[in-house]
Length: 535
Image: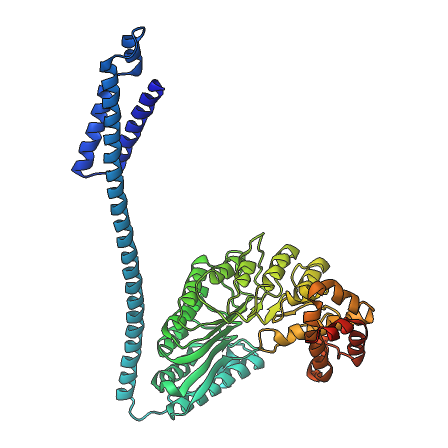
């Protein structure tokens, strides 16, 4: 035991010396380290002591040496405890300083973002002042472009009609804004014809941009949209400064062919950064295939103060994984009301970000994931998450790799008829689009956290059990000893369902409860016992 004690003491001394060398840099710590090393070197090996005292028993000198070693060890341990406490205190101070520094850095970033916005706004105002001082008597100066100009370049009548329609619309909007009238929507382009670009159109773009820049913020709100428009860098450079700080609430970019995809996406990013009133962003059928572009748009969305509705459809290709983009958005601290990621080649590969997000019951009310590659394994997790979600009102999963097995799992998440308790534990707020659940009652958008839907489903189960002639039996089986306490509530509920029925939602598979159910309950279900215990 004595030999073992000395080995432990020397090992502990060595370990403590190493700890001090790594973590302590002040002179006191270095002095303590030297003392520990000296004591370790001067301590005599236990084997030598045993040889000196072997055969003669422990001498008084050996006992004194042992007591001195014990005292030394206790002294070292006490010193090391003080040093450790001091080091821990220093580490806590450093941690507090780091947290304070991080808070200051975040505040600096916030102030820099505000300064950048104000600088952009000031630049826009300066250009406005220049326009007002140089053009005191305004007239629409963009020259008309004859049809022959387009015919000579080989465009067909459909394209010529689209171009002339755009110029007429741009001129009309310009006059409206210049006249001080309000404009709730500026939508440039057509749904079925690509708007080509020609340098002869630049004066019309300039007139429109100047009108947007000069109008009052209260006169311009709503949607700014670009649809099937070829936007070269010259047009982007004309539009971007004019849109800074305007009160547009939605940006819609659909089916556009940018000369440079990065420039087009940067246009949207700048729009987000410079318009704090924006609430909705739509980017449809305009490809995003660069990782840098994806990171930029995700950062702009998640850091925006008011965007809550995002729609990306058919945007992400092989170089930009749609599922990774969705995960980045869901894992941010920002809250959303609607997310649409249709046709983005989403494959979770076993990932659980979608179901984990839904299980937290965020304020999201609409989630569209149509025409992706979600499978039955994903559906199992989503269905379980729906049972903990009371805010999602619409989930669209059409066109995914979901089989009949997955469809049945989703159906049970909405209505599980195995028992009354299982019905209550289902989701009562979310309507799932993309599947035919047959006669299963569906959730109706009621805005009451599913109270009405839950009542409808219980009524549906009562009717089903009555038609199967198992109503009274199932009530006795499930309610057990509490049957007498619950009977009045069940009767009141049945009566309510008999007298109220919403004919506007017949297609949601909610049948009218007949009076036969009330008669069945009164006749066979614990009525004598209930009467005897009426007091």
